[in-house]
Structure formats: C-alpha cells, structure tokens
Amino acid sequence: MDWLDADGYTIGRLLVTRGLAALYVVAFLAALLQFRALIGERGILPVPQFLAHRSFRQAPSLFHWRYSDRVFTVVAATGLVLSAATLAGVTERLPLPACMGVWLLMWALYLSIVNVGQIWYSFGWESLLLEAGLLAVFLGDADTAPPFLVLILLRWLLFRLEFGAGLIKMRGDRCWRDLTCLYYHHETQPMPGPLSRHFHLLPNPLHRIEVAGNHVTQLVVPFGLFLPQPVAGIAATLMIVTQLWLVVSGNFAWLNWLTIVLALSVIPDGFYSRFADTAREYGSTPLPFTVAVVVLTVLVAVLSYWPVANMLSRRQAMNASFNKWHFVNTYGAFGTVTRTRREVIVEGTDDAVDTPATEWREYEFKGKPGDVYRRPRQYAPYHLRLDWLMWFAAISRDYAAGWFPRFVGKLLENDPDTLRLLRHNPFPDAPPRRIRARMFRYRFATRGERRATGQWWMREELWDFMLPMSREDLP
Image (cartoon, rainbow, N blue to C red; front, side, top):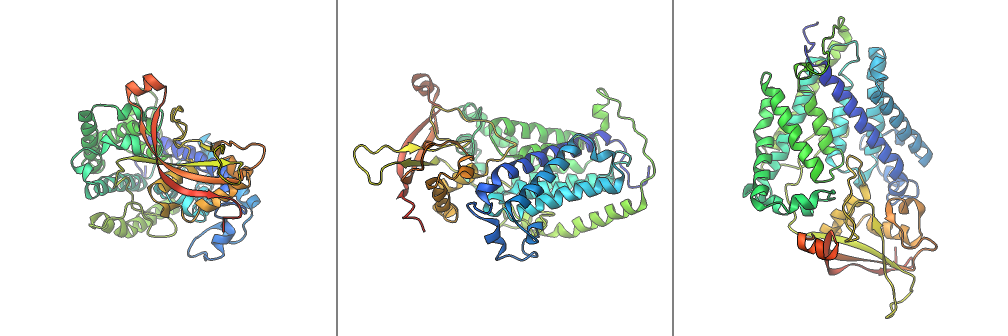
C-alpha cells in the first residue's frame, strides 16, 4: 500500500463505479430516445440554431465540430455502450490508463450533450452526474488500491449536495422552518409516483416528523462524513435511508440514486465482511496516477471557493455551475414548495371553429398527471424531460415561452418524434386542426373520493393557458 491508498474501501469503490455506470446508462439512453423531438435538427429547440450563437468556450461540446442527428446518435450510443461495458465490469479490468480513458470519454460525451441540451438539460442532477463522473476517472482500476484523496472528494461532493439542499430550505420557504412543507409537497412535486398519494394522506404529525428528519439528515449528519469510522459510515447510512424514502415517494430522475451511490463510497469493507470476502492485495500505485490524484485534489480545493461562498451567502443559488465543465458545483432543491398543484392540459380538435358539437380530445403524457383515473407511474431514475418542463409551465408561462408554441406546432403536424414522447395521441390518423391548453387544479382524491369514484385525482378548471391555435396562428 502506498501512502495515498485507502485501506478497506474495495467494495465501496466497486459499488460507486458500478452505480455511476448504471446511471450513465440511464442518462445516455434517455438522450438517445428523446433528443430528436427536443433538440434534434427538426426538434423543438434545435442544436444547430443554439450553436450558431455559442462558441466552444461558452458551451464546450464535441458538436461544435459537427452536428447532425446521426452524429448525436453515434455520440449517445457510444456513451451507452461504454457505460454498459463499465457496468458489466469490463472497464475496471483494463490497464489503468485505458480504464481512466473510458471514464473520461463517457464524461466528455455526456458533457457534450448537456452543454447543447438547453432548457431540457437545466437540472441539477445533470451537473451532479458530470461532477461524480469526472471524479470516477481517478478511482483507479481493479488492480489499483482505492485512492484515499478521491474518496474524500466524493464525501466533499456528498456534503455539498446534502448541506446545500438543507441550507436552501431553511433560507427559503417558511414551511420548511415551521415543518409543514410536506403537507403539500407529496402532492405538488413535479412528477408524483405510485405511492405519492399514500404519503400525502399520512397524518400531519408524521409530515412534520418527515421534515424534521430531513433537516437533521441534511444540516447535521453531513458533518459526520469527515469523522472516523464507524461514525462516517453511520452518517452515510442515514443519508441512504432518507434517499430511499424519497425514491418511493416520488420521481426525481437519478438525483436520489446518485446520492445513494455517493454515500456507498463512505461505508467501509468491514460492513460487508459478513456477506463477502473483502480482503484484497494491491500492487504499487503508479507514480503518475498518484500525481494526477494530488493535482485533482488541489483543483477541487481551489474551485470549492465558489460553492462555499454560495452556501455562506444569504442569496444562495439553488443549483449552479461556476464553470462550463460542470465541475465543483453547488446544489440544492425545493427552496420553495408550491401549495396547490396546477396542470396544463393540452387538447386538440378537428373543427376549424368552435360549435356546440366541437369535441376537444386530450393528449396524455407519460408521467405528468392528466387522466384522473390513471395512477401515477414510477419512471425514476429515467428522466422524462418534457413532462418535467410541463410542471414548470404550470407554475408560470414564462418558463414555457421559448418552447411551448413550438411544441404545439409539432402536435399540429403530428410530428412522430414528438408524439413518441407522449403516452397517447388522440389524433392517430390525421393531425388536429387546432390545439388549445387549459389550466386545471389537481389534488389527490381522498380515501372516500377514491372509493366512490375510482379516481386518483380530483380536478377543477381554472383558466385558459393558451387559446385555440391553428398552424396559421403560430409564428
């Protein structure tokens, strides 16, 4: 063992690398299946138009050299194959330089996608996956001892993720301070899951306990990550339990799963010794690798100035990258909790003008609430990007101004790529003549309402989100 090698974290490193590889698989798969409609050459927000006004320095991406839907497919498919091979354990068996090269290539490919993804890729878990993925480059292969400094950097990332989220809550919505946010949040979160209604219907005292437990996990427990074992492992275990609670109560893409993966790096081999043989002898760590790890650590220490300053600021940003490489970011979520759930319901008709006989038919999305008789589905860690943006659109039209009219235009064309993002197209034979969007208030059905009606949701119409539009009406 060399002086920078960590003793007793073989299983932890294995779980981190396999877990990250699995999440890369999900991320590249989601990109491959959704990009044509969202950012493709004929997409809602095409990449070529975006890159026409951006330099490489402003948005580092391989697509500056060339973009076409075919090139994007190659990039995403290559990332998918590499991450699947890494998940299968192939990458860690390669020589150390090749192993590091595979991880670096996966990071570069996904960075290229995120930096041209525009609003569809504006979520904190994109930066989180990129930051964790770049640290994974320096975790070594199966013949190299886990580097102690990189394990500490993973803990520092986990600390910023949890503590930043805790601070943004305490500085944000008052309901986090009076412990009432979960009176609403299970119902109003962006995309509820199959069990979200059951969580919402828990008694209010239990909701207050949920919030109090969240505060302890995010504001107190993270400091335990830097204490000796077993305290650090216990702190990580508490975080894992909390994240699993969030996994079963909602759909937050891979945010919770990636937090769990990071926490697994803190648990020592001693925990697993009762289940498997954790003893492993490693050879001498190559000096260039040790130097690279030290340089990485110094770089993270320098770049940490900005997220630390952000956490200490009264005007703390919730999710922010301080460089275009998405490295050493600041994190946080749900500083504000909405009290009522609003949903934009998109409808189409074959009629050119309204008459008493006009029939409006609803488009059904895969994840976001629509059909009141449909139970919410579990999609996480897969990320339904259009569904998430529809939640933001219901909060404010401003969030949808740049893309919603173009989305409507695609529906008026029966664009096949766009329709593949939806669960149900009510116009399978020919496109509608007009599209409209109405705002509804949604709430979970009570137990009595569920028994009486069979509905999962109760809803009432509020106002028009978009008046009926034909293809001629759109810009």
